[in-house]
Length: 121
Image (cartoon, rainbow, N blue to C red; front, side):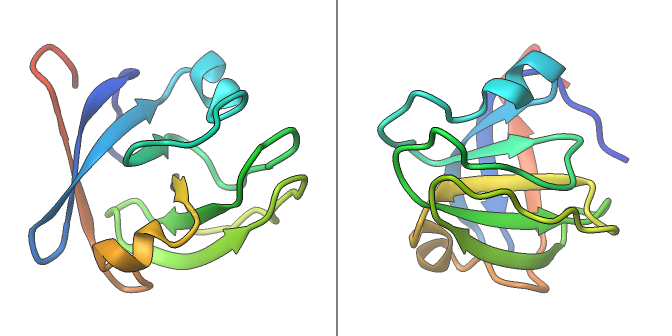
């Protein structure tokens, strides 16, 4: 299973679409997630993660559940103040503003790749 540090980079969607990416891999960063923000430019990868909540969120999210090979196994739009059920095969979760993932071509079955800026693994 891939392991990353908190940081920034880009998400490469199967087919070549590039998306600005934040990686939240520490407990603190995963817990903070998108709380307190009015939006997000690009996407946030929570790793490891099997579920999310949108309590105190200001906007709805697209939530993609990724398996250990970074293949999308499920995709949902989640309104504020909800808790999602854990996905047993999920190892990572990708979050973005509602509607963004469809524009990027992210759907179940699509594989993504993470490229971090120098100095991150």
